Image (tube, rainbow, N blue to C red; front, side, top):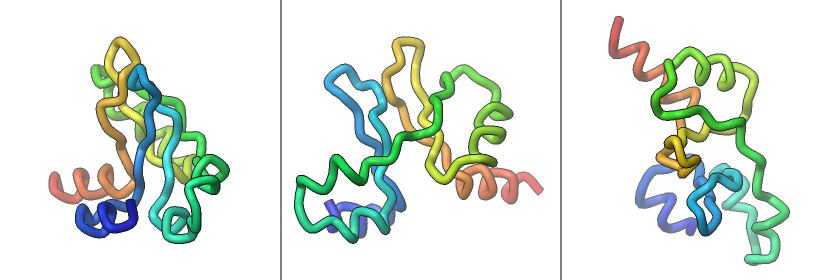
Length: 97
């Protein structure tokens, strides 16, 4: 997993259950400290409440302002589509101005 993060340049990994529903996220610095797969369950951070992909960006910004973890984006069946991070919001705003 560490090698995959390095290759992708990712700062976090989102985990889902068999139904595709969000279980939580692991941040890069947490993953770098994992010595065994048993530790994985203990380090999984509960993610912020998810937002629907059809939602306005405002709810995501409000959730991100008070969260250390990315906000999951789900479809109407609550399947994880992706995540929004503080960094992605700032980059989007910077590109507009």
